[in-house]
Length: 378
Image (cartoon, rainbow, N blue to C red; front, side, top):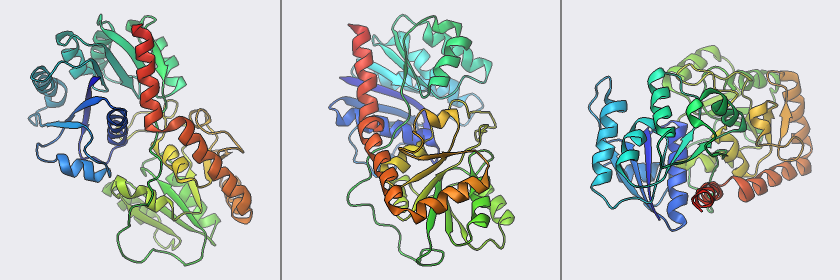
């Protein structure tokens, strides 16, 4: 099947949406489909994009650079997508995450449309664009990344009007074998000390506050945070001055993440119940954190916040230990307990990996979405 994936993400990029988009396109292509990904970027950067994600170029990547104008992303970019798509063989499915572009190309191309959402529309313009898209005769399926988001969409978007909705949480690829080689150089911290790792952003609510508190509560451990913008890194470095057992690594290419996760004894996913996105909006109720699936793929024991969004993915005592958000004493006790009980820690990690392989790979996600679209088309 010819599939056109329409993304608004700039590539290459550090944002989680880029991982989601690239993972889905790779999975669709690996299943034998002819995939074309439309994304923002500079022509000529295609090889660098695939390299950043450790991927072979299994699908066609069309990078489009709208002028840097206030409405470039939402008005000019859709026009570029429409022009490029109409110059190619007609797709049999249009899938994506950019409502403006999909709302333009949907009526122009005789193909069913499936739209993936990760949050309710914040601005009126996007709300109108999504309402227009949902009302198109060829609209086939809304894909939401969590049960809570699906429920809120049904309540907040009258245009959905009973149209089909599928909940498909985010995912991850299995850890590669062999793992990618890490850059040469010394690993910070005391050799032989337990290593605890966190991967993700550092802005409020994502969990860095708990990581910092654990560094103080677990002086026998070395804690590592991977990710963050330069601004957030500078802020945390100032706040953590003198904390010798907490190491801020900053951003690393996504292709290297599996190798870094393999270094850790425990993996931390401590978001607060209320999480603000990088744009400052509350997303805690709807999120499906990529880091959790990548942790599961690593097969390492996971300590995670006991919040509804993570209970959709993890099972307490089976695939992770779910702990009260912000309760440093409980987190420290759980960490020490797993470090002392290697057999239990290994069992948690193995169960999480098995769950990932059976349910949450990008391949499984893509297959499930296409299967639902096929069922709806009869």
